[in-house]
Every structure is written in C-alpha cells, then in structure tokens.
Amino acid sequence: SRDTGDYISAILSCKNVIDIGKIHAQVIVNGFSQELPVANKLLYLYAQFRAVADAESLFEEMNVKDSVSWSVMVGGFAKSGDFCKCLRVFREIVRSSLNLDNYTLPIVIRACREKKDGAVGGLIHELALKSGMDLDFYVCAALV
Image 1 (cartoon, one colour):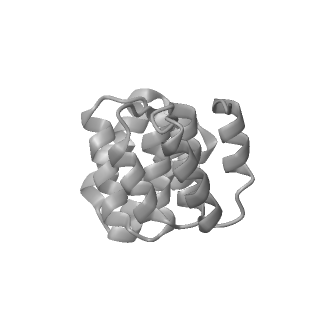
Image 2 (cartoon, rainbow, N blue to C red):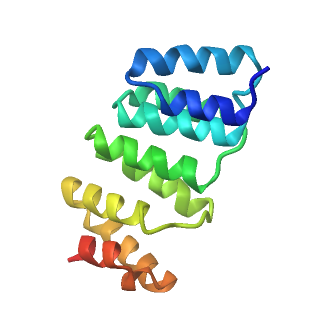
C-alpha cells in the first residue's frame, strides 16, 4: 500500500501533465487527495507545467489549504500570465490573514506592475513594511 511519501516521490517524477493526471487519479482513488503535502505537490507541478485550470480545480477541492497552497496558486497564475487571478488570490490571502512570504510578495509585485495596479502595489509595499519583509533581498529587488 502506498503512503504520502510514495505519492510525493511519484508526483515529483512526473515529466508532463499527462503523468501528473495519472498520479492525481491514483491519489483520488486511494484516498490521498486531502493529504496536504500530496495536494500541494500536485498543485505545484500543475502550475509548473502551466496547467493552471487543473491546479485551480484541485485548489478548489482542497478542504485544507496552507500558505504553500496559496503561494503556489499566486505563482501559477502569474506564470501563466493571468495577473488578474494572481491578484485576486493575493487579496484572499490578505483577507484570510495568512502569513505572507518572500516568495509570494515579489510575484504579486510583478503582477501589479503588469496590471498597472498602483493601489494594490501600495498595499503590498505597506504589508512589506509592516512585516519587515521590505528588508528581504527578493522583496526589496521587486519593489525597486
């Protein structure tokens, strides 16, 4: 019988979206779809392969989400060029009072730049100052 670690290894070995879909189907059939580490790895690979619709469907089905889940969705939408959804997910993160990290903020700053959304950009700058992340190299570089 497989366990969480087996599924994570299998997910990380996927070479394309078809492989991910096959593993995802096994994950569902064997009752591991709500295991957060497994779901987050699936989300991550769907996003990496720009299968953002699949990632979004999985994200919506997840009963439990953590900051990794949310950050992966922000990054996935940005990578696919859907800056509106990227910013929408970011707003949900802020509303939910989830912890922001130095991975998510630079992505959202770029999305604001692409969308020419100065209002959200100002909010992000304020959040970076309040959290002390304005001192982080990656956040600082994105703010410039």
